Amino acid sequence: MSSMASGIGRREFLRYSGMIAAMLGLSQGGAIRVAHALEHESDKRPVIWLDGQSCGGCLDSFLGSADPTAGRILTELISLRFSTALSGLSGAALLAEARKARDAEGHIVVVEGSIPIASDGGFSVIGHDGSDVKAKDLVVELSEGAGAMIAAGTCASFGGIPAAAGADTGATPVGDIVDTDRLINVSGCPPHPDWIVASIVHMLLYGTIPARDGDSRPTFIYKKKVHDLCERRAAFDDGRFVKSFSDVKEGEDRCMAELGCKGPIAHGDCPTRRFNSGTNWCVGANVPCTACTEHEFYEAVDPLLFKVADLTPPLGGAGVSADRVATIAVGAAAAGVLGHAAVTGTSRFISSRKKERSKLDIDMARDDDGDEEQDV
Ligand code: SF4
Ligand code: SF4
Image: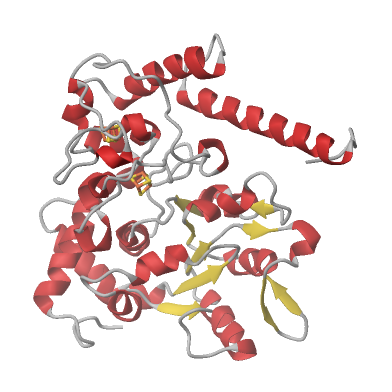
């Protein structure tokens, strides 16, 4: 691969390299270093993109990248060798490509979607080579010798929607079946294309996976909370809230917390990076953040538009960190909604919702068939 030889203009290429360098925290000369890595290292670390149990939205988001286009990123900047959705090959020939790419020491495997393990993995068959090749087996097989395993999206990272209550496929996060030392969770529903590319570039540059948080997510992406980067944060601090969706005005700049915004518990640079090549993001489009980057998504934040707390503005005034806001919000929710006396953190609030919901599911199942022992 030589990006210069294959179509991206020098200026565009350097601008893109500069953006990735800034994400990785590289200062002067960073763009040149990233450009060099993309031009000279990517062939040595081919990328295999596997699909598990997903809606295809993560790849769709990636394909929506317009500057440069996803096609250019995939074919000219990184060396994509296997994708069931994008490859011209199919069947055994395509599988052979994946296995060939695996032979390159330090290859990178991107997995989109959770991995179904119930019914011996029979819910997700990626191909056939005399017998069914199941996602759960191929992910493990291709992880051998991999420099990094990138779980792209919240389903791959944490189970996501396929793992929510009622699902019976045994939807499992990638980190539960492969070596987590080399795992990079790039959560989001969907994740921003830049998050995936920058994680790959980090491997090309340093040959190591980036620093990660407690959920194995790169800190250069997920260190800050959405709430702390949101352009409506001042409105939150001032107590100016949108009260209903029919109340949304043109040029709206009021906070969406009353409509269920979960920016105070979500991590990511969505407000400043923005989707569709920097066009807009959730709150910018007057849609509350649903905390789609968190491991609680989807089950524990369903229904998506439930209000986290009875907010009584201002919650401590301007400059209060999202952690503090989340704690205040959770305290209010615990007192006013759940009735739990000692809830002190958002995660506890979310897990208590999870327990309430699974109890509800159990009760409903009992009502349905009267079987006290049923495993739900
Ligand atoms: S609650 Fe949501 S809309 Fe309000 S400031 Fe925080 S992230 Fe922005
Ligand atoms: S703003 Fe919230 S819902 Fe939107 S992409 Fe970011 S974390 Fe997900």
